[in-house]
Image (cartoon, rainbow, N blue to C red):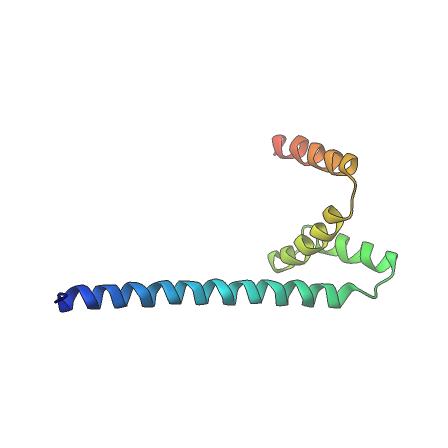
Amino acid sequence: MADPGMRRAEAAHIKQDTFIESIAEVDEMMNLNLRQAIIQRVHDKTDEELYEVIEDSIGGAEQLLPGLGVLFEIIWEHTDKSVQDTLVHTLKEHLASR
């Protein structure tokens, strides 16, 4: 016969695991929704408007950083390796100087 204290501890552990999984699922959904919302807001912008969105976001409020991250992700995914190498080199060079 199992110790009642052990059963409670096991049940609490299972609840905690389930809670953590739920948080991870909500976090994933929020990230997807945020990503989709950002894409939706800029998908019909002209080149000039996209340029302005990026320029206005750089150095702006921290709330704008996720949007830049989504835009960078799209750029990264659709850029060839040589451009990615240049971007990484530029980033590394400027991080060293900060």
